[in-house]
Length: 300
Image (cartoon, rainbow, N blue to C red):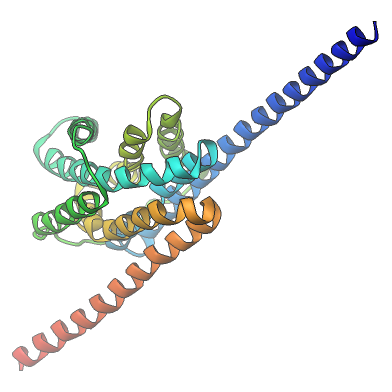
Protein backbone atom coordinates (compact mmCIF):
# COMPACT_ATOMS: atom_id res chain seq x y z
CA UNK A 1 0.00 0.00 0.00
CA UNK A 2 2.82 2.36 0.90
CA UNK A 3 4.55 1.41 -2.33
CA UNK A 4 1.46 2.30 -4.36
CA UNK A 5 1.12 5.62 -2.56
CA UNK A 6 4.78 6.42 -3.22
CA UNK A 7 4.44 5.52 -6.89
CA UNK A 8 1.32 7.64 -7.16
CA UNK A 9 3.12 10.55 -5.47
CA UNK A 10 6.08 10.23 -7.83
CA UNK A 11 3.76 10.11 -10.83
CA UNK A 12 1.91 13.21 -9.68
CA UNK A 13 5.24 14.95 -9.11
CA UNK A 14 6.37 13.97 -12.60
CA UNK A 15 3.21 15.35 -14.19
CA UNK A 16 3.53 18.55 -12.14
CA UNK A 17 7.10 19.10 -13.35
CA UNK A 18 6.08 18.30 -16.93
CA UNK A 19 3.17 20.74 -16.73
CA UNK A 20 5.44 23.47 -15.37
CA UNK A 21 7.93 22.86 -18.17
CA UNK A 22 5.14 23.09 -20.76
CA UNK A 23 3.93 26.37 -19.24
CA UNK A 24 7.47 27.77 -19.17
CA UNK A 25 8.05 26.71 -22.80
CA UNK A 26 4.76 28.34 -23.80
CA UNK A 27 5.75 31.58 -22.06
CA UNK A 28 9.19 31.46 -23.71
CA UNK A 29 7.59 31.07 -27.16
CA UNK A 30 5.33 34.06 -26.49
CA UNK A 31 8.31 36.11 -25.29
CA UNK A 32 10.35 35.19 -28.38
CA UNK A 33 7.42 36.18 -30.61
CA UNK A 34 7.26 39.62 -28.98
CA UNK A 35 11.04 40.11 -29.17
CA UNK A 36 11.13 39.16 -32.86
CA UNK A 37 8.26 41.54 -33.58
CA UNK A 38 9.84 44.48 -31.73
CA UNK A 39 13.27 43.95 -33.27
CA UNK A 40 11.75 43.75 -36.75
CA UNK A 41 9.84 46.98 -36.20
CA UNK A 42 12.95 48.79 -34.93
CA UNK A 43 15.20 47.71 -37.82
CA UNK A 44 12.86 48.43 -40.71
CA UNK A 45 11.49 51.70 -39.40
CA UNK A 46 15.02 52.81 -38.53
CA UNK A 47 16.39 52.03 -42.00
CA UNK A 48 13.43 53.64 -43.79
CA UNK A 49 13.75 56.84 -41.73
CA UNK A 50 17.51 56.80 -42.37
CA UNK A 51 16.89 56.53 -46.12
CA UNK A 52 14.54 59.52 -45.97
CA UNK A 53 16.57 61.77 -43.68
CA UNK A 54 20.16 60.86 -44.58
CA UNK A 55 20.19 59.05 -47.94
CA UNK A 56 19.13 55.77 -49.59
CA UNK A 57 22.87 55.18 -50.15
CA UNK A 58 23.58 55.01 -46.41
CA UNK A 59 20.48 52.87 -45.85
CA UNK A 60 21.69 50.50 -48.58
CA UNK A 61 25.11 50.09 -46.97
CA UNK A 62 23.66 49.61 -43.48
CA UNK A 63 21.06 47.16 -44.81
CA UNK A 64 24.00 44.79 -45.30
CA UNK A 65 24.81 45.18 -41.61
CA UNK A 66 23.90 41.96 -39.77
CA UNK A 67 20.34 42.71 -38.78
CA UNK A 68 17.97 40.10 -40.20
CA UNK A 69 20.58 37.34 -40.30
CA UNK A 70 21.74 38.27 -36.79
CA UNK A 71 18.21 37.90 -35.46
CA UNK A 72 17.74 34.60 -37.27
CA UNK A 73 21.06 33.07 -36.21
CA UNK A 74 20.63 34.26 -32.63
CA UNK A 75 17.23 32.58 -32.35
CA UNK A 76 18.61 29.45 -34.02
CA UNK A 77 21.14 29.37 -31.18
CA UNK A 78 18.55 30.14 -28.53
CA UNK A 79 15.78 27.81 -29.72
CA UNK A 80 17.96 24.93 -31.02
CA UNK A 81 21.66 25.16 -30.00
CA UNK A 82 24.80 27.32 -30.46
CA UNK A 83 26.42 24.54 -32.54
CA UNK A 84 23.38 24.44 -34.83
CA UNK A 85 23.56 28.22 -35.26
CA UNK A 86 27.32 28.08 -35.91
CA UNK A 87 26.88 25.48 -38.64
CA UNK A 88 23.98 27.47 -40.08
CA UNK A 89 26.21 30.58 -40.16
CA UNK A 90 28.57 28.88 -42.64
CA UNK A 91 25.66 28.22 -44.98
CA UNK A 92 24.38 31.71 -44.23
CA UNK A 93 27.54 33.06 -45.90
CA UNK A 94 26.78 30.94 -48.95
CA UNK A 95 23.18 32.10 -48.82
CA UNK A 96 24.36 35.71 -49.18
CA UNK A 97 25.03 34.85 -52.82
CA UNK A 98 21.30 34.23 -53.16
CA UNK A 99 20.55 37.48 -51.31
CA UNK A 100 22.73 39.42 -53.77
CA UNK A 101 20.98 37.66 -56.64
CA UNK A 102 17.67 38.68 -55.04
CA UNK A 103 18.50 42.41 -55.18
CA UNK A 104 19.99 42.13 -58.68
CA UNK A 105 16.89 40.43 -60.09
CA UNK A 106 14.66 42.96 -58.31
CA UNK A 107 16.68 45.73 -59.97
CA UNK A 108 16.42 44.17 -63.45
CA UNK A 109 12.71 43.33 -63.07
CA UNK A 110 11.83 46.81 -61.79
CA UNK A 111 13.42 48.28 -64.92
CA UNK A 112 11.62 45.82 -67.21
CA UNK A 113 8.02 45.61 -65.97
CA UNK A 114 5.74 48.56 -66.70
CA UNK A 115 2.62 47.31 -64.89
CA UNK A 116 2.40 45.80 -61.41
CA UNK A 117 6.05 46.76 -61.04
CA UNK A 118 6.43 46.18 -57.30
CA UNK A 119 4.53 42.88 -57.29
CA UNK A 120 6.28 41.37 -60.31
CA UNK A 121 9.70 42.62 -59.20
CA UNK A 122 9.16 41.03 -55.78
CA UNK A 123 7.97 37.71 -57.20
CA UNK A 124 10.89 37.62 -59.65
CA UNK A 125 13.41 38.34 -56.88
CA UNK A 126 11.93 35.76 -54.49
CA UNK A 127 11.89 33.12 -57.24
CA UNK A 128 15.52 33.89 -58.08
CA UNK A 129 16.50 33.66 -54.40
CA UNK A 130 14.97 30.22 -53.91
CA UNK A 131 16.36 28.99 -57.25
CA UNK A 132 19.90 29.94 -56.18
CA UNK A 133 19.36 28.52 -52.68
CA UNK A 134 18.24 25.21 -54.21
CA UNK A 135 21.43 25.06 -56.28
CA UNK A 136 23.62 26.00 -53.31
CA UNK A 137 22.06 23.18 -51.29
CA UNK A 138 23.58 20.71 -53.75
CA UNK A 139 27.13 22.03 -53.26
CA UNK A 140 29.45 20.34 -50.76
CA UNK A 141 31.09 23.28 -49.02
CA UNK A 142 33.59 24.22 -46.34
CA UNK A 143 34.37 27.57 -44.72
CA UNK A 144 36.85 28.55 -47.43
CA UNK A 145 34.32 28.07 -50.22
CA UNK A 146 31.62 29.69 -48.08
CA UNK A 147 33.79 32.82 -47.78
CA UNK A 148 35.16 32.89 -51.33
CA UNK A 149 31.86 32.61 -53.24
CA UNK A 150 29.93 35.50 -51.57
CA UNK A 151 33.02 37.77 -51.66
CA UNK A 152 33.40 37.08 -55.39
CA UNK A 153 29.72 37.78 -56.00
CA UNK A 154 29.87 40.97 -53.91
CA UNK A 155 32.65 42.37 -56.11
CA UNK A 156 30.75 41.22 -59.21
CA UNK A 157 27.57 43.05 -58.19
CA UNK A 158 29.50 46.17 -57.17
CA UNK A 159 30.70 46.18 -60.78
CA UNK A 160 27.23 45.52 -62.21
CA UNK A 161 25.66 48.29 -60.10
CA UNK A 162 28.40 50.82 -60.89
CA UNK A 163 26.25 52.71 -63.42
CA UNK A 164 23.36 53.25 -60.98
CA UNK A 165 23.17 56.86 -59.84
CA UNK A 166 23.02 57.69 -56.13
CA UNK A 167 20.00 59.94 -55.59
CA UNK A 168 18.53 61.40 -52.42
CA UNK A 169 14.91 61.68 -51.33
CA UNK A 170 13.97 65.35 -51.69
CA UNK A 171 10.26 65.30 -50.81
CA UNK A 172 9.77 63.12 -47.74
CA UNK A 173 6.53 61.34 -46.89
CA UNK A 174 4.83 62.53 -43.74
CA UNK A 175 5.02 59.78 -41.15
CA UNK A 176 1.92 58.71 -39.26
CA UNK A 177 0.84 55.68 -37.25
CA UNK A 178 -0.65 53.95 -40.29
CA UNK A 179 2.57 54.24 -42.31
CA UNK A 180 4.68 53.07 -39.36
CA UNK A 181 2.38 50.07 -38.83
CA UNK A 182 2.56 49.00 -42.48
CA UNK A 183 6.36 49.33 -42.45
CA UNK A 184 6.61 47.25 -39.31
CA UNK A 185 4.19 44.58 -40.56
CA UNK A 186 6.34 43.54 -43.54
CA UNK A 187 9.47 43.01 -41.46
CA UNK A 188 7.65 41.25 -38.64
CA UNK A 189 5.93 38.81 -40.99
CA UNK A 190 9.07 37.91 -42.94
CA UNK A 191 11.30 37.52 -39.86
CA UNK A 192 8.78 35.35 -38.02
CA UNK A 193 8.46 33.03 -41.01
CA UNK A 194 12.20 32.71 -41.63
CA UNK A 195 13.13 32.16 -37.96
CA UNK A 196 10.62 29.29 -37.82
CA UNK A 197 12.51 27.33 -40.49
CA UNK A 198 14.89 25.32 -38.21
CA UNK A 199 11.94 23.54 -36.63
CA UNK A 200 11.25 21.83 -39.95
CA UNK A 201 14.62 21.56 -41.74
CA UNK A 202 18.27 20.85 -40.94
CA UNK A 203 21.05 23.39 -40.38
CA UNK A 204 22.06 23.39 -44.08
CA UNK A 205 18.68 24.62 -45.33
CA UNK A 206 18.19 26.76 -42.23
CA UNK A 207 21.49 28.56 -42.86
CA UNK A 208 20.64 29.17 -46.50
CA UNK A 209 17.21 30.51 -45.57
CA UNK A 210 18.69 32.69 -42.83
CA UNK A 211 20.42 34.77 -45.52
CA UNK A 212 17.05 35.91 -46.89
CA UNK A 213 17.04 39.75 -46.83
CA UNK A 214 14.55 39.95 -43.98
CA UNK A 215 15.07 43.65 -43.28
CA UNK A 216 16.27 44.75 -46.73
CA UNK A 217 13.23 43.38 -48.58
CA UNK A 218 10.65 45.29 -46.49
CA UNK A 219 12.86 48.40 -46.77
CA UNK A 220 12.90 48.07 -50.57
CA UNK A 221 9.12 47.66 -50.66
CA UNK A 222 8.63 50.72 -48.44
CA UNK A 223 10.94 52.95 -50.50
CA UNK A 224 9.56 51.67 -53.82
CA UNK A 225 5.93 52.08 -52.77
CA UNK A 226 6.41 55.46 -51.06
CA UNK A 227 8.83 57.02 -53.56
CA UNK A 228 10.16 55.50 -56.80
CA UNK A 229 12.14 52.62 -58.26
CA UNK A 230 15.09 54.98 -58.78
CA UNK A 231 15.33 55.47 -55.01
CA UNK A 232 15.21 51.68 -54.55
CA UNK A 233 18.01 51.34 -57.11
CA UNK A 234 20.18 53.62 -54.96
CA UNK A 235 19.58 51.32 -52.00
CA UNK A 236 20.35 48.26 -54.16
CA UNK A 237 23.56 49.81 -55.57
CA UNK A 238 25.08 50.00 -52.09
CA UNK A 239 23.92 46.64 -50.73
CA UNK A 240 27.03 44.67 -51.91
CA UNK A 241 29.29 47.11 -50.03
CA UNK A 242 27.46 46.50 -46.78
CA UNK A 243 27.28 42.77 -47.50
CA UNK A 244 30.94 42.36 -46.54
CA UNK A 245 30.01 43.19 -42.94
CA UNK A 246 27.50 40.35 -43.01
CA UNK A 247 30.09 37.93 -44.41
CA UNK A 248 32.43 38.90 -41.56
CA UNK A 249 29.61 38.57 -39.01
CA UNK A 250 28.62 35.08 -40.19
CA UNK A 251 32.23 33.90 -40.25
CA UNK A 252 32.85 35.09 -36.68
CA UNK A 253 29.55 33.53 -35.52
CA UNK A 254 30.62 30.16 -36.93
CA UNK A 255 33.79 30.37 -34.80
CA UNK A 256 32.71 32.01 -31.53
CA UNK A 257 29.21 30.61 -30.88
CA UNK A 258 30.50 27.13 -29.89
CA UNK A 259 33.31 28.73 -27.84
CA UNK A 260 31.58 31.58 -25.99
CA UNK A 261 27.85 30.97 -26.41
CA UNK A 262 25.25 33.08 -28.19
CA UNK A 263 25.34 36.21 -26.03
CA UNK A 264 29.09 36.90 -25.91
CA UNK A 265 29.44 35.46 -29.42
CA UNK A 266 26.86 37.89 -30.79
CA UNK A 267 28.64 40.88 -29.21
CA UNK A 268 32.02 39.80 -30.62
CA UNK A 269 30.52 39.26 -34.08
CA UNK A 270 28.75 42.63 -34.10
CA UNK A 271 32.04 44.23 -33.05
CA UNK A 272 33.86 42.66 -36.01
CA UNK A 273 31.14 43.76 -38.46
CA UNK A 274 31.18 47.30 -37.05
CA UNK A 275 34.96 47.57 -37.38
CA UNK A 276 34.63 46.75 -41.10
CA UNK A 277 32.07 49.53 -41.64
CA UNK A 278 34.19 52.06 -39.75
CA UNK A 279 37.27 51.13 -41.79
CA UNK A 280 35.26 51.35 -45.02
CA UNK A 281 33.91 54.76 -44.03
CA UNK A 282 37.45 56.03 -43.33
CA UNK A 283 38.83 54.69 -46.63
CA UNK A 284 35.84 56.07 -48.57
CA UNK A 285 36.33 59.48 -46.94
CA UNK A 286 40.02 59.58 -47.93
CA UNK A 287 39.24 58.53 -51.52
CA UNK A 288 36.45 61.13 -51.84
CA UNK A 289 38.79 63.89 -50.62
CA UNK A 290 41.42 62.85 -53.15
CA UNK A 291 38.80 62.84 -55.91
CA UNK A 292 37.61 66.33 -54.97
CA UNK A 293 41.19 67.59 -54.83
CA UNK A 294 41.93 66.07 -58.23
CA UNK A 295 38.78 67.64 -59.72
CA UNK A 296 39.69 71.04 -58.27
CA UNK A 297 43.21 70.88 -59.75
CA UNK A 298 41.85 69.87 -63.17
CA UNK A 299 39.35 72.75 -63.00
CA UNK A 300 42.17 75.24 -62.53
